[in-house]
Length: 286
Ligand code: FDA
Image (cartoon, rainbow, N blue to C red):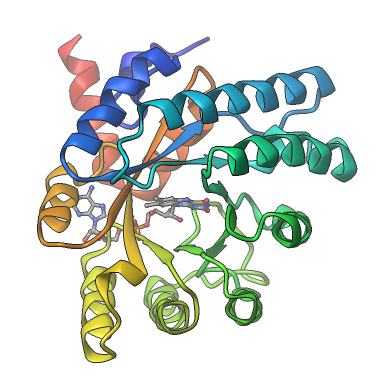
């Protein structure tokens, strides 16, 4: 059974790019930067992976054409959509084709991080591409994973832009911290290292305690506001997003769109019970 799209419409900007673009424009008009994400993951068919690559290439061209000069719009992509689970070399070739067009348009490409079975492969593909496109690609690191301590060191050494988040996937205790206080403490430590040692990293969280810690650290260390950005998801805390931009912080909103919205939608419900209540309330209204 396919669920009706309106259930996900709080978190997903539309099922097509044409439906999503007005949301991008509204965010840009309010001073927010945007990362557009065409939803899709775990592709096992080469033709589907090639189609995803081509759709992303068109997306880069369209997004560049509608982006005002003062906004840092970009794309975000999951490598499992480009064939990572089929064959790494095939995925790399698809990503290279996308990166060539992205670099032509001076557009940054963020590689979303998926479950921990894909972390090694994603970071290895990232490093290969980073050698050829150093200014246009960056990874995501998840504070909950125990390995992230080392990965942060490596990214600081390379001096690349990282998106730091807690991690949205259910992970075993052997690989990931399960206690939220520990995850917050790890997040805070990683945020400090990224702000100090990378040129422009993204602090991706809706968590007030982590947002406060980031602002405080930047102020204490005299790290200027153009050296980092905050990031939030489309539909979550929209007033806070606008307040932070009005307050002089770079704020980026991750805007997903597409017909393959269910896994993304499910992760949003899983991480916060208030999102489930919101869904039920809307469902009762129909
Ligand atoms: P969390 O849900 O843990 O909530 C902590 C506290 O924040 C709450 O108790 C409340 O105080 C406050 N809060 C949260 N939501 C609120 C709301 N709507 N209104 C009011 N208060 C609220 N994950 C991943 O594994 N790979 C990835 O590539 C990405 N990419 C990504 C991009 C961006 C831009 C973001 C923001 C997040 C991701 N994530 C991700 C998801 C991330 O790992 C994580 O699952 C979610 O952001 C939830 O964790 P938070 O720290 O945001 O708050």
